[in-house]
Image 1 (cartoon, helix red, strand yellow):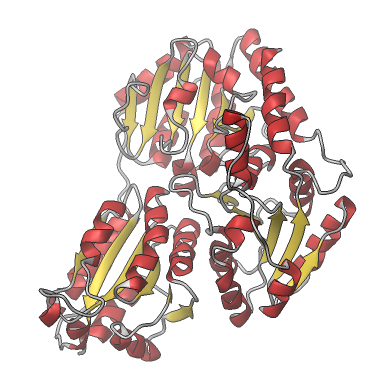
Image 2 (cartoon, one colour):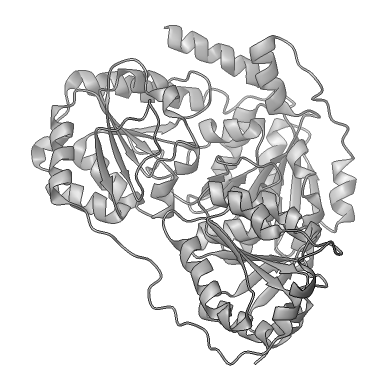
Length: 551
């Protein structure tokens, strides 16, 4: 059969049902072969958006999302989205076209070494030099992408190889994931450390969300009596309403819960990546022991010199720890419960301080309180990168893992809109909200038309302040002034209506919930809720944190 047909059959065998991408000349054989394949091709308006859609596909399903681009600028446009998926450990396979192998050795039109470009930002990148190797290359790319820790892989398919003939067949997928065991001796050592600790804490990372171990985490907290906080990407690993949840950490400034980490004599990290919240932020104060529970050994860092490691499947590790828990394990000292409980109460008070504020522009806290009120526990919020990301991390209580997504490794602006398109395609029964600032929104605004084309009714909650708000926040906190952060914005109502979307400008705090409800009730097209935001709250929060902690 033709190599392009074999390539798609291999993708079908891996379970691929959707490819996000932009067609090109050098991937034309694959595009034509798609006409006879059950795989749906979602036509995007920019390759970066296609990669972000594939990234979210991987986060939600656990199976690699697939994106496709042509050679040269098509491949370079993919890089940011591919690198983001890789650093955030989302399984993704990128397919890029390439010039004929007969001209790769010399200067030629759009010819560049794409594989070498992708290698630093992926788990693996390779090219197909022989059509008969396609089954092995495709299977390896998917196996590596979904294997722990998940990430991105790249397959380059030159145009002459795509046209070649092959008699090979796809490799059948027999094992999708390996589940490694846990040494009983290590489990006993962890339980001993817990028994000896006066002030233990759990730090829950994105690995808990990827492994879908929320119920096991909750049981472990209940059985041990230990309080737990999550990183931005670990939100929901323990429900925010759980009485021993310390919400989210990693704001970058001192926060209420940081005091708990400074007092801790034992920190047990589960599924934690230091790319999110570096240990020099929390390994301070009291000398503490560290237990690292993850699928891979920890990164070497002088502030993360662990005392004990449990390396293996997170579900298996938590099941083993739960089996080893005795009734005495949950008996924590009254002073511990009082001290940490006070922190949770203080943080809970902080979260609700401005729930009913009527000011306009609207305070971030009020926006997130209203949004939380109209979203069910299972509905999905996807945050872009900007000042709003910090507010979402701190002020959006998350009750289920995998319902609040914050890209916090590579931290690329422009993520939320295309990611929401992918999420709503996969889970049409849920409300899906992309929360964007006016800076990040315009970085991938062109793919609003993709949502219109495929009748995908996402809701974009657009915070407008006319500035790069997070950069201003950090500049003013560090230097007392700001530089080059002002934006010139279009009329967002006219802009999104020109795409065929529903525009819902908000003119008062009381108008936000009705606008959101109208957006959710619109079944066949995207809606953009345009909200002026009061970012004077940024520095007020910085000062407020100083006041709280000084007391």
